[in-house]
Length: 355
Image 1: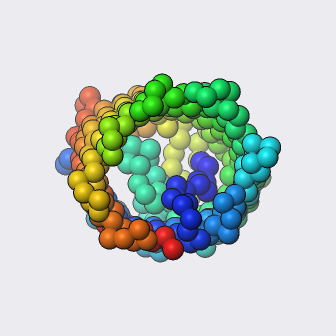
Image 2: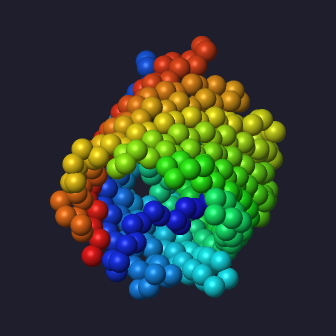
Protein backbone atom coordinates (compact mmCIF):
# COMPACT_ATOMS: atom_id res chain seq x y z
CA UNK A 1 0.00 0.00 0.00
CA UNK A 2 0.96 3.64 -0.08
CA UNK A 3 3.65 5.23 2.03
CA UNK A 4 2.38 8.00 4.27
CA UNK A 5 4.68 11.01 4.03
CA UNK A 6 2.43 13.56 5.71
CA UNK A 7 2.53 14.41 9.39
CA UNK A 8 0.45 16.84 11.43
CA UNK A 9 2.60 19.54 12.98
CA UNK A 10 1.79 22.64 14.96
CA UNK A 11 3.64 25.22 12.89
CA UNK A 12 3.04 28.44 14.84
CA UNK A 13 6.18 30.58 14.75
CA UNK A 14 8.56 27.71 15.53
CA UNK A 15 11.43 26.66 13.32
CA UNK A 16 11.73 23.03 14.46
CA UNK A 17 9.38 20.33 15.74
CA UNK A 18 10.34 17.04 17.40
CA UNK A 19 7.86 14.25 18.15
CA UNK A 20 9.00 11.09 19.96
CA UNK A 21 6.32 8.53 20.81
CA UNK A 22 7.13 5.12 22.32
CA UNK A 23 3.96 2.99 22.07
CA UNK A 24 3.10 -0.56 23.15
CA UNK A 25 0.36 -2.57 21.41
CA UNK A 26 -0.80 -6.04 22.37
CA UNK A 27 -3.37 -8.33 20.73
CA UNK A 28 -5.01 -11.47 22.09
CA UNK A 29 -6.78 -13.96 19.82
CA UNK A 30 -8.76 -16.11 22.25
CA UNK A 31 -7.48 -19.68 22.41
CA UNK A 32 -4.94 -18.97 19.70
CA UNK A 33 -2.22 -16.36 19.20
CA UNK A 34 -1.02 -13.55 21.46
CA UNK A 35 1.43 -11.00 20.14
CA UNK A 36 2.71 -7.53 20.93
CA UNK A 37 4.68 -4.75 19.30
CA UNK A 38 6.70 -1.98 20.91
CA UNK A 39 7.37 0.91 18.54
CA UNK A 40 9.24 4.17 18.91
CA UNK A 41 8.04 6.73 16.39
CA UNK A 42 10.33 9.69 15.70
CA UNK A 43 9.07 12.64 13.65
CA UNK A 44 11.13 15.74 12.89
CA UNK A 45 9.97 18.93 11.24
CA UNK A 46 11.92 21.89 9.88
CA UNK A 47 10.02 25.04 8.87
CA UNK A 48 12.35 27.65 7.32
CA UNK A 49 9.35 29.77 6.28
CA UNK A 50 5.60 29.84 6.71
CA UNK A 51 5.16 28.17 3.29
CA UNK A 52 7.97 25.60 3.41
CA UNK A 53 8.44 22.44 5.45
CA UNK A 54 10.81 19.49 5.54
CA UNK A 55 9.55 16.41 7.43
CA UNK A 56 11.39 13.25 8.49
CA UNK A 57 9.72 10.15 9.93
CA UNK A 58 11.39 7.00 11.31
CA UNK A 59 10.35 4.03 13.47
CA UNK A 60 12.00 1.34 15.52
CA UNK A 61 9.86 -1.66 16.46
CA UNK A 62 10.13 -4.96 18.29
CA UNK A 63 7.62 -7.82 17.97
CA UNK A 64 7.12 -10.44 20.66
CA UNK A 65 4.65 -13.02 21.91
CA UNK A 66 3.68 -16.19 20.08
CA UNK A 67 5.00 -14.92 16.75
CA UNK A 68 8.60 -15.23 15.61
CA UNK A 69 10.53 -12.32 17.13
CA UNK A 70 11.59 -9.42 14.94
CA UNK A 71 13.10 -6.06 15.82
CA UNK A 72 14.78 -3.22 13.99
CA UNK A 73 14.18 -0.02 12.10
CA UNK A 74 11.52 0.33 9.45
CA UNK A 75 12.11 2.50 6.38
CA UNK A 76 12.53 6.24 6.93
CA UNK A 77 10.51 8.80 4.99
CA UNK A 78 11.52 12.33 4.04
CA UNK A 79 9.13 14.81 2.46
CA UNK A 80 9.39 18.40 1.28
CA UNK A 81 6.32 20.61 1.03
CA UNK A 82 6.07 24.01 -0.61
CA UNK A 83 2.95 26.15 -0.38
CA UNK A 84 2.56 28.40 -3.44
CA UNK A 85 -0.09 30.56 -1.81
CA UNK A 86 -0.31 32.91 -4.80
CA UNK A 87 -1.62 29.99 -6.89
CA UNK A 88 -3.43 28.11 -4.09
CA UNK A 89 -1.06 25.16 -4.69
CA UNK A 90 0.89 22.87 -2.38
CA UNK A 91 3.70 20.86 -3.98
CA UNK A 92 5.06 17.74 -2.30
CA UNK A 93 8.10 15.56 -2.98
CA UNK A 94 8.95 12.56 -0.83
CA UNK A 95 11.26 9.60 -0.69
CA UNK A 96 11.08 6.28 1.17
CA UNK A 97 14.63 5.41 2.20
CA UNK A 98 15.18 1.60 2.39
CA UNK A 99 16.74 1.70 5.85
CA UNK A 100 14.48 -1.01 7.28
CA UNK A 101 14.79 -4.76 7.48
CA UNK A 102 14.44 -6.85 4.31
CA UNK A 103 15.72 -10.35 3.44
CA UNK A 104 13.63 -11.87 6.21
CA UNK A 105 13.68 -15.51 7.25
CA UNK A 106 10.57 -17.57 6.43
CA UNK A 107 9.32 -17.25 10.05
CA UNK A 108 9.96 -13.51 10.13
CA UNK A 109 8.14 -13.14 6.81
CA UNK A 110 5.13 -14.93 8.28
CA UNK A 111 5.26 -12.60 11.30
CA UNK A 112 5.14 -9.49 9.10
CA UNK A 113 2.37 -10.98 6.96
CA UNK A 114 0.38 -11.70 10.14
CA UNK A 115 0.71 -8.30 11.84
CA UNK A 116 0.06 -6.35 8.62
CA UNK A 117 -3.61 -7.41 8.51
CA UNK A 118 -5.92 -4.37 8.32
CA UNK A 119 -7.80 -5.66 11.37
CA UNK A 120 -4.83 -5.02 13.68
CA UNK A 121 -3.92 -1.53 12.38
CA UNK A 122 -0.44 -1.74 13.92
CA UNK A 123 1.70 1.38 14.15
CA UNK A 124 4.54 -0.48 12.42
CA UNK A 125 2.90 -3.05 10.10
CA UNK A 126 6.03 -3.70 8.04
CA UNK A 127 9.75 -3.11 8.37
CA UNK A 128 11.30 -2.60 4.96
CA UNK A 129 10.79 -2.29 1.23
CA UNK A 130 12.58 -0.69 -1.69
CA UNK A 131 13.30 2.94 -2.40
CA UNK A 132 10.11 4.80 -3.32
CA UNK A 133 9.66 8.31 -4.66
CA UNK A 134 6.44 10.31 -4.53
CA UNK A 135 5.52 13.54 -6.29
CA UNK A 136 2.27 15.33 -5.63
CA UNK A 137 0.31 18.55 -5.84
CA UNK A 138 -2.86 19.79 -4.20
CA UNK A 139 -5.03 22.78 -5.04
CA UNK A 140 -7.30 24.61 -2.60
CA UNK A 141 -9.90 27.21 -3.52
CA UNK A 142 -12.19 29.25 -1.29
CA UNK A 143 -15.60 29.14 -2.94
CA UNK A 144 -17.21 31.52 -0.45
CA UNK A 145 -16.93 32.57 3.19
CA UNK A 146 -18.30 29.18 4.26
CA UNK A 147 -17.01 26.77 1.59
CA UNK A 148 -13.49 25.64 0.68
CA UNK A 149 -12.80 22.94 -1.93
CA UNK A 150 -9.62 21.05 -2.71
CA UNK A 151 -8.15 18.57 -5.20
CA UNK A 152 -4.98 16.52 -5.03
CA UNK A 153 -2.94 14.27 -7.29
CA UNK A 154 0.18 12.23 -6.53
CA UNK A 155 2.25 9.54 -8.22
CA UNK A 156 4.47 7.08 -6.36
CA UNK A 157 7.29 5.16 -8.05
CA UNK A 158 8.35 1.96 -6.28
CA UNK A 159 11.53 -0.03 -6.76
CA UNK A 160 12.10 -3.75 -6.32
CA UNK A 161 13.64 -5.33 -3.25
CA UNK A 162 14.46 -8.79 -1.88
CA UNK A 163 11.98 -9.59 0.92
CA UNK A 164 13.36 -13.05 1.78
CA UNK A 165 16.78 -14.24 2.86
CA UNK A 166 18.29 -17.11 0.93
CA UNK A 167 16.00 -16.72 -2.08
CA UNK A 168 16.85 -14.85 -5.24
CA UNK A 169 13.31 -13.68 -6.01
CA UNK A 170 12.96 -9.88 -6.32
CA UNK A 171 9.60 -8.36 -5.46
CA UNK A 172 8.48 -5.27 -7.41
CA UNK A 173 5.43 -3.50 -5.96
CA UNK A 174 3.35 -1.62 -8.49
CA UNK A 175 3.50 2.13 -8.80
CA UNK A 176 0.55 4.10 -7.44
CA UNK A 177 -1.63 7.00 -8.54
CA UNK A 178 -3.61 8.80 -5.85
CA UNK A 179 -6.47 11.24 -6.48
CA UNK A 180 -8.15 13.16 -3.68
CA UNK A 181 -10.99 15.64 -3.44
CA UNK A 182 -12.69 17.33 -0.54
CA UNK A 183 -14.80 20.17 0.74
CA UNK A 184 -14.82 22.07 4.05
CA UNK A 185 -18.05 23.69 5.17
CA UNK A 186 -18.40 26.20 7.99
CA UNK A 187 -21.87 25.55 9.35
CA UNK A 188 -21.62 28.24 12.02
CA UNK A 189 -19.02 30.04 14.11
CA UNK A 190 -18.60 26.86 16.19
CA UNK A 191 -19.44 24.06 13.71
CA UNK A 192 -17.62 22.64 10.69
CA UNK A 193 -18.15 19.72 8.33
CA UNK A 194 -15.45 18.17 6.17
CA UNK A 195 -15.97 15.52 3.48
CA UNK A 196 -13.18 13.83 1.51
CA UNK A 197 -12.75 11.07 -1.03
CA UNK A 198 -9.42 9.47 -1.93
CA UNK A 199 -8.79 6.83 -4.57
CA UNK A 200 -5.51 4.97 -5.03
CA UNK A 201 -4.99 3.00 -8.24
CA UNK A 202 -2.41 0.21 -8.48
CA UNK A 203 -0.85 -1.78 -11.28
CA UNK A 204 0.41 -5.37 -10.96
CA UNK A 205 2.98 -6.45 -8.38
CA UNK A 206 5.68 -8.69 -9.84
CA UNK A 207 8.14 -11.34 -8.70
CA UNK A 208 11.09 -11.69 -11.08
CA UNK A 209 9.08 -9.87 -13.75
CA UNK A 210 5.99 -12.14 -13.44
CA UNK A 211 2.65 -10.63 -12.41
CA UNK A 212 1.49 -12.16 -9.12
CA UNK A 213 -0.94 -9.70 -7.59
CA UNK A 214 -2.97 -6.58 -8.32
CA UNK A 215 -4.38 -4.41 -5.56
CA UNK A 216 -6.67 -2.88 -8.17
CA UNK A 217 -7.78 0.17 -6.24
CA UNK A 218 -8.62 1.44 -2.79
CA UNK A 219 -11.20 4.18 -2.27
CA UNK A 220 -11.72 5.90 1.07
CA UNK A 221 -14.69 8.15 1.79
CA UNK A 222 -14.86 10.04 5.07
CA UNK A 223 -16.78 12.84 6.73
CA UNK A 224 -15.81 14.71 9.93
CA UNK A 225 -18.11 16.95 11.97
CA UNK A 226 -16.63 19.28 14.60
CA UNK A 227 -18.25 21.49 17.18
CA UNK A 228 -16.47 23.76 19.63
CA UNK A 229 -17.58 24.74 23.11
CA UNK A 230 -15.15 27.42 24.14
CA UNK A 231 -11.84 25.64 24.78
CA UNK A 232 -13.49 22.22 24.40
CA UNK A 233 -14.32 20.40 21.19
CA UNK A 234 -16.37 17.48 19.88
CA UNK A 235 -15.52 15.59 16.68
CA UNK A 236 -17.38 12.73 14.98
CA UNK A 237 -16.09 10.74 12.01
CA UNK A 238 -17.56 8.28 9.52
CA UNK A 239 -15.29 6.41 7.11
CA UNK A 240 -15.79 3.73 4.47
CA UNK A 241 -12.89 2.00 2.74
CA UNK A 242 -13.43 -0.05 -0.43
CA UNK A 243 -10.72 -2.47 -1.59
CA UNK A 244 -10.39 -4.43 -4.82
CA UNK A 245 -7.64 -6.94 -5.60
CA UNK A 246 -6.71 -10.02 -7.60
CA UNK A 247 -4.05 -12.72 -7.33
CA UNK A 248 -2.47 -14.35 -10.39
CA UNK A 249 -1.30 -17.87 -9.57
CA UNK A 250 -1.12 -19.98 -6.46
CA UNK A 251 2.21 -18.99 -4.90
CA UNK A 252 3.94 -15.66 -4.55
CA UNK A 253 7.27 -17.25 -3.64
CA UNK A 254 8.65 -20.54 -4.87
CA UNK A 255 8.97 -22.18 -1.45
CA UNK A 256 5.19 -21.90 -0.89
CA UNK A 257 5.22 -19.51 2.08
CA UNK A 258 1.59 -18.71 1.30
CA UNK A 259 -1.03 -20.47 -0.76
CA UNK A 260 -3.59 -18.26 -2.43
CA UNK A 261 -6.59 -19.19 -4.51
CA UNK A 262 -6.72 -17.13 -7.66
CA UNK A 263 -9.22 -14.23 -7.80
CA UNK A 264 -10.36 -14.58 -4.16
CA UNK A 265 -10.50 -11.27 -2.30
CA UNK A 266 -8.57 -11.19 0.98
CA UNK A 267 -8.43 -7.58 2.24
CA UNK A 268 -11.91 -6.55 3.46
CA UNK A 269 -13.84 -3.34 3.00
CA UNK A 270 -14.19 -1.43 6.28
CA UNK A 271 -16.75 0.87 7.87
CA UNK A 272 -15.56 3.03 10.77
CA UNK A 273 -17.46 5.35 13.11
CA UNK A 274 -15.94 7.27 15.99
CA UNK A 275 -16.50 10.25 18.25
CA UNK A 276 -14.01 12.15 20.44
CA UNK A 277 -14.36 14.93 22.97
CA UNK A 278 -11.38 17.09 23.90
CA UNK A 279 -11.75 18.78 27.28
CA UNK A 280 -9.47 21.50 28.58
CA UNK A 281 -9.00 20.88 32.30
CA UNK A 282 -6.55 23.74 32.81
CA UNK A 283 -4.16 25.88 30.80
CA UNK A 284 -1.59 23.06 31.01
CA UNK A 285 -3.71 19.90 30.98
CA UNK A 286 -6.31 18.57 28.54
CA UNK A 287 -8.06 15.23 28.16
CA UNK A 288 -9.30 13.57 24.98
CA UNK A 289 -11.64 10.59 25.21
CA UNK A 290 -13.71 8.77 22.64
CA UNK A 291 -15.58 5.72 21.40
CA UNK A 292 -15.22 3.90 18.08
CA UNK A 293 -16.33 0.88 16.10
CA UNK A 294 -15.07 -0.81 12.92
CA UNK A 295 -16.99 -3.34 10.81
CA UNK A 296 -15.06 -5.51 8.34
CA UNK A 297 -16.47 -7.20 5.26
CA UNK A 298 -16.44 -10.99 5.00
CA UNK A 299 -13.76 -12.20 2.56
CA UNK A 300 -11.57 -15.27 2.04
CA UNK A 301 -9.24 -14.01 4.78
CA UNK A 302 -9.54 -15.42 8.29
CA UNK A 303 -9.20 -11.86 9.66
CA UNK A 304 -12.42 -10.59 8.10
CA UNK A 305 -16.11 -10.34 9.05
CA UNK A 306 -15.12 -8.92 12.46
CA UNK A 307 -16.90 -6.14 14.34
CA UNK A 308 -14.52 -4.23 16.61
CA UNK A 309 -15.48 -1.64 19.22
CA UNK A 310 -13.57 0.19 21.89
CA UNK A 311 -12.59 3.41 23.64
CA UNK A 312 -9.57 5.66 23.86
CA UNK A 313 -8.28 8.17 26.42
CA UNK A 314 -5.58 10.72 25.65
CA UNK A 315 -4.27 12.97 28.44
CA UNK A 316 -1.95 15.77 27.30
CA UNK A 317 0.19 17.79 29.68
CA UNK A 318 1.74 21.00 28.35
CA UNK A 319 4.73 21.94 30.47
CA UNK A 320 5.43 25.09 28.44
CA UNK A 321 4.67 26.57 25.03
CA UNK A 322 7.58 24.52 23.65
CA UNK A 323 7.18 21.22 25.47
CA UNK A 324 4.27 18.82 26.06
CA UNK A 325 3.71 15.18 27.02
CA UNK A 326 0.97 13.30 25.14
CA UNK A 327 -0.37 9.97 26.45
CA UNK A 328 -2.37 7.35 24.52
CA UNK A 329 -4.59 4.69 26.11
CA UNK A 330 -6.79 2.49 23.94
CA UNK A 331 -8.78 -0.69 24.46
CA UNK A 332 -10.82 -2.65 21.92
CA UNK A 333 -12.64 -5.96 21.54
CA UNK A 334 -13.89 -7.77 18.48
CA UNK A 335 -15.98 -10.75 17.45
CA UNK A 336 -17.06 -12.58 14.31
CA UNK A 337 -19.39 -15.55 13.66
CA UNK A 338 -17.62 -18.89 14.23
CA UNK A 339 -14.28 -17.20 14.96
CA UNK A 340 -12.37 -16.51 18.19
CA UNK A 341 -12.91 -13.24 20.00
CA UNK A 342 -10.07 -10.74 19.86
CA UNK A 343 -8.97 -7.94 22.19
CA UNK A 344 -6.30 -5.26 22.15
CA UNK A 345 -4.66 -2.79 24.50
CA UNK A 346 -2.47 0.16 23.52
CA UNK A 347 -0.39 2.44 25.71
CA UNK A 348 1.97 5.19 24.69
CA UNK A 349 3.58 8.27 26.21
CA UNK A 350 5.91 10.64 24.40
CA UNK A 351 7.27 14.14 24.11
CA UNK A 352 6.45 17.00 21.73
CA UNK A 353 8.92 19.84 21.35
CA UNK A 354 8.55 23.03 19.31
CA UNK A 355 11.35 25.58 19.26
